[in-house]
Length: 271
Image 1 (tube, helix red, strand yellow):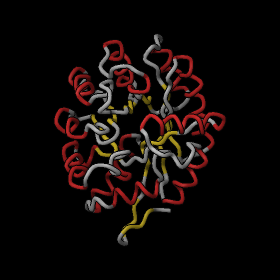
Image 2 (cartoon, one colour):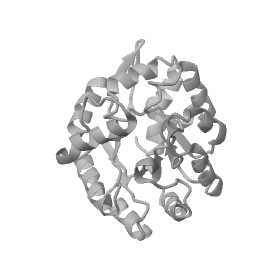
Image 3 (cartoon, one colour):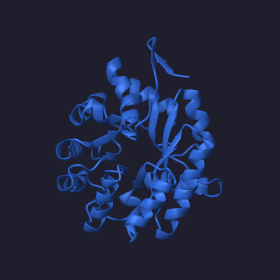
């Protein structure tokens, strides 16, 4: 069921949602809340995302989870792939850890499982986005036509600073990536100042609750409507709440359609 706003029908895709196996979902969700000092009133289960997303009118979801240990990579990737098989509206990103050595082998495994790229959270994983050893990972993802979704920005650490991603893009201009949280969580002005590139996308997740309407629109103008994607950061926020926050920006219907679905469909080659 599409989202209807002001008598206009919109398809919606969520480019940023976290899900976890049931046995660890509550613990993983609470760890995120503790890290960001936010109350988490739901658990990151695929069934909850699907039910709440469907109720809100979202019909496609990009799901992911983060490997904080090397030995978690394949088990998380397997879980994401199984979840995508169980829920047809889901597309998946594999887990990646910065200490992985067999880059070709790991990407072969990812593609064998039908996933669309990898998710990295440098602050959780404790590595710098622009570490030299990661450049080969980004180049291989680019060669294979896969997307890298980064958590970007945090005013408490420097691992995921937008300036670090900007240095990567300068070295690999063709690198297709998504800089989450309008380019940098709590680093929005820095992101708009230093980060750019023809293949750099941003998502709206975990930003609209904090930034002003004008600042959010300025970020979207900087990166380009055609390079902005809607995201909820589930289970941080509910699909319904994030859609309300997005529509409060009062963008044009054409801009809404691009950000809510069309850019997602183009990036992930959907019909």
